[in-house]
Length: 199
Image (cartoon, rainbow, N blue to C red):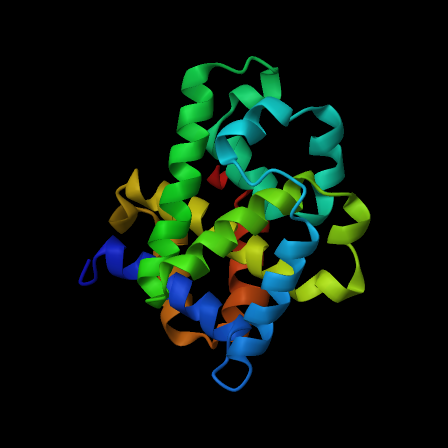
């Protein structure tokens, strides 16, 4: 391939970011996420601790947070069996930190901003479902679902010879030529739906 997978990952993150943080409203959406994180401040934001709190009821209530379910199932399949080990906690935490660090580097934001996303992303998984499905939080949920799904897709690409995998080559081509809106609301969801075996 003529482009590196590292560059592909970065393009995906930047395309997602530009959809939710257009230059004319960038501070507005960031303020909304900050306010939501404050409202949920009584809920733990620890990825390491989250793993021990995962249970069937949480899993069933995450239909509005599909990106998180995909991430959790991909990174830590022990969650499905209920057999949680220290190793599983560390692996989940490591990948959660890696995700938001990688996203932060791609969009070139300050550490406090990527830390905000990491904290709020966990709290949204543990909060009442009514908060996630509230019309006030539609944009926030779309943002987190998109970033989490892209992380899983990028991880999967790392483990494949994608030069031999047409569906991933097609995805990269669409990533390059699509608008941010088309990528977030069309290309990425369609890819996840068609390739449920992506994880």
